[in-house]
Image (tube, rainbow, N blue to C red; front, top):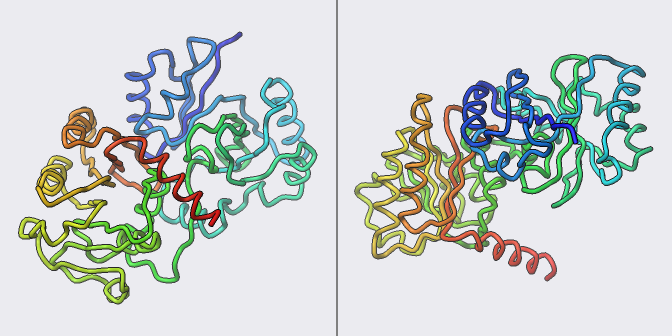
Length: 369
């Protein structure tokens, strides 16, 4: 078999970080091509290790690169058919995911993506030709795929230029076009932290249960609390600053108007989840977290943290941060730069990985009931 080419989607502006991480963690891949938010690599071996690639911090979505097209109209579909006919994967394909490499380039693009239900403007997904093409093959367009489903990726690079890829779903993030989830947007958004937290909840698969108590450190003005409340959690916001009145009015929200250093841990002893998205260095965030989770009154099962990364050299400290979290009793720790993140990373930590499976079983039982 000839070597594969691999495509990787990342956040706009993080291309060098993604290349650096792949060079260090995936030594069988050789850099080939790059545009903002999109890279390709050549695999020295015949098959790339996608389980490894998809576990990386800066790779949002990855798959096999099949080629590119720079055309429009009937010529576009002739080229597309020609590229697909050379692939051995088509027999198992069920989905076509159409998305732009500029996802993650800014809030406006992401908000348009959400507003249009997963498709941008001036996009071939809106054309009758693409619908007809997929109908003939029995493919669904931009639908949520399932575990082990085979997906063709049609990635818009520029006006008439597209990259063709292919991936097999191994994680929740690969189920959705471009690795960017679609979720409801309330009429009023308290702050952009709402979007970050909604995406973090989707990616992390934290097994929240209705009525669970989640403590948010530095909650004002309330964007993250707004997202947590959509999961029917009871939220305790710890912040001396004022919260948005709409959040305060929610019966499932309680504010403790204190600095975290002045908080009595007894007051939050029923909390099972912890969230922190403060504009401080990762080391300070971890010191604060450690003070909470190691307190005798606390029984935190999982956390969603945001690490502010102001300088590239801080990336070298990520393994140290990961081990520090594990030393606190959280054996399952993952880091990822999400689409709504800026110069920051999302970190999810659970006491153990089996909690994810338990949470899925609980949700299935609720649905069946």
